Length: 263
Image 1: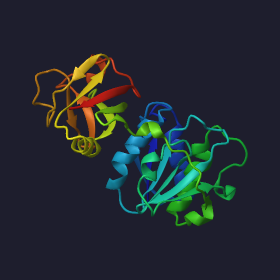
Image 2 (image 1 turned 30 degrees about the vertical axis):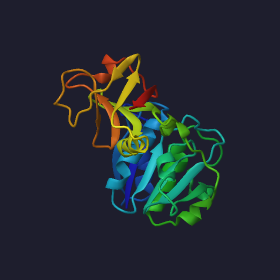
Image 3 (image 1 turned 30 degrees about the horizontal axis):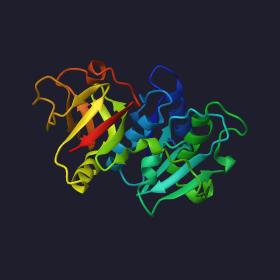
């Protein structure tokens, strides 16, 4: 069984290796895939974005261990969510928001069976002591019903989705910056064009840091060298520049708000 890992642990500490050791000790046959350990520290929306844009490309039955956890060691719950043929193990802090959108076949459980933990009591490394063991037991075939109880109470991160301020204005956020300095927004292209159609509009422009961007392109090469907009392979609206860092040029910040004006 495949376990895909998304964390903000980085590559310089022993954290990721320890999680793999815990999993392999419980299930030596587990196939572990590192999806991303470079989520910015504590940035929950960034972890949600990586999860949303990757999970569909994995084999059915994959277990996703998703750990970006500013509330580690507190009384917030740990969740086991089953949806779309996958399982997701994560803290209850809104990081699974895109998974909650998947529909009626989703079931959310609170992980409450401590016999699947390495330790009982307080822990400042719950990814090691609780979440990784749960993922490992799931990969061995342990039923989700044996690990957690169904719950209707879980955190949804409303900041993960864009807001329609008026029929002609959308408030979005920067939720990811890729290696090339492209600014990825939380506005899906499909949703944006639905809003254009709904208001009878044909054009849009984006305002960020007192700059207005209206040039829309199909790829990264066909541009004049100024910032431009496009829908990336991930399906979201992004701000890019040809062979330059839009993140630096626009002095943008993660989680920064911007406005889209439809006309």
